[in-house]
Image 1 (cartoon, rainbow, N blue to C red):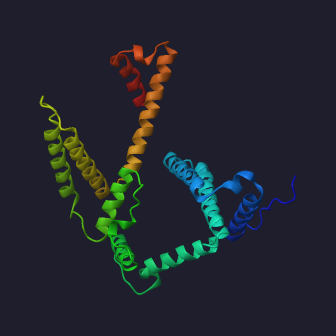
Image 2: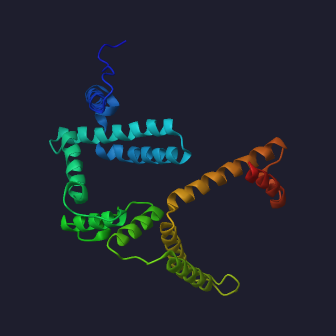
Image 3: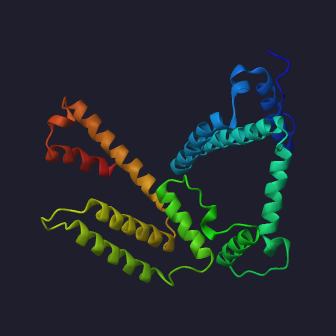
Length: 268
């Protein structure tokens, strides 16, 4: 066994973090693959690792969460290692920077500001960001976010400065209004030609209002939809397996025949 493997030392965060830094430094100087990586080549891998972490969280698999957290943390350290090679910043700069930001954004903890609840905290957060130079409350929403997640973040940030409905009943009225507008545009029961572009716009408005309502009743729409995706996959794969057991191909089955297995899957 090689004698240069950093040992597991004291069971404290600083020792474990230093071990990760030592491993990354060694890989960066000695491993052909690690030597070649740049921030750009790591980017898509980091996105993949983040989705894997998200999936593990939704599955409730804490051992997998632990593993994926390690992968994500390794990527973060790797970016800092690359930046240190060009003297742009180091991992120490990264850690101190986020600590400074957290202290600055929590004057109710590290200052004399008083808050009543989490909503006050969010409002203060957005006001402080504007003072720090953000030109818009929505400037902090990444352009590359998936649309459903982006809609949630936009609404949360608008709420942070008081631009929001007073109660969930008002939001539900908006949902019903948007649903009616979509039905009128799509003309579900009619036979006129549909203006797809306009219908798409109305459908987007309907989705946005539903996401808004979910926020009011403390449902994370991204998690809710992903759980439904997983549920559908489980049921559909049960349907496939039962069809195969009976020597049938799905494309040769009627919808009524498939519904028998689908209803069985719903009871599992």
